[in-house]
Image (cartoon, rainbow, N blue to C red; front, side, top):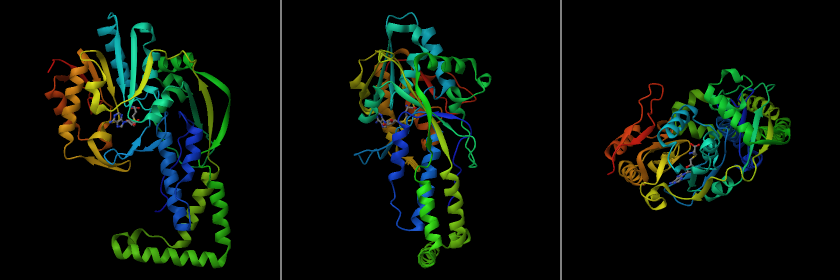
Length: 401
Ligand SMILES: C[S@@+](CC[C@H](N)C(=O)[O-])C[C@H]1O[C@@H](n2cnc3c(N)ncnc32)[C@H](O)[C@@H]1O
């Protein structure tokens, strides 16, 4: 099928730091010259819209100048991995709660939601807690320094099929009783720190779908143009089938493709989200600082033996993998790169300090055994082997190397 993605997430809010702009920016790719282009455009829009609802934080892509890095994916969220966070925050309180100073690094912090989530959840540590975010993307760091955010809710009345995502539940669900005690506390903290600004407003999920639909209908009504496009499509199909005969079974007649496209555009034109703006006071996150930095220079960024916890979640793939958002694979020298990162982490961490990776790093094309080997070779042990968490992502520093 040409148009095959389900689009929305039922009755959920998502938080999106800069969503109004993002929604607008998302319309600007792929200027359509033909219906065939329109089809790929609809697919691309579905892809991006799906991605947007997969995360309740920042939705942004940034083309890096470095060919090594490719397109940076800056998605993040408040309270993104609550199971891990609960363990890590309890560990901090138990192990370091009486220390004079507690330093947490939020590595690859994107727009700062993780750092601010930790600041909210550990606010009883008040003055002795420092949270230092760094990210390679300077635009994200600028946004992290601003304490506004948005909640976005998909409207229930759309006939599109929805993706359901647990990570959104904490701030967005109406069924608060379904949340764990920890998740309820996260939600309450958000309510203490962030205050609604004005009333929620509606934004289209696919801002240009209406216009595209009108254009499509005009083309379908114009016999001459229709025939021209049909011939172009058939010619493209003929070339494609010659190159890849296995695709022959999947190709549809032009009329059917147009019907599908029209149906999808009609649904998209009626899909809306409700956006609510929030702001936290300027002084709310005074213990969070954000700066530009590269994980490969960790050893130069922080003093030896100075950090209690380094969070480096959902970002290793940018450094260990080649490829782009659609498909990634490990670089040949990934083991050496990971070894260098692990050595530097060992240097900056205090004894019994923690390193936290994402719960599902392997989803991004990373071979988890490379992380495991580098950590074990450089003075770390798993804090716990959690059967629900296949990636075993929390490491404790057990020796200086
Ligand atoms: C998907 S986001 C993850 C954000 C956050 N850690 C989380 O889990 O929600 C990945 C982030 O890694 C950052 N990044 C990529 N390569 C980096 C590097 N070498 N050093 C620091 N940050 C990097 C990107 O700019 C992006 O903001």
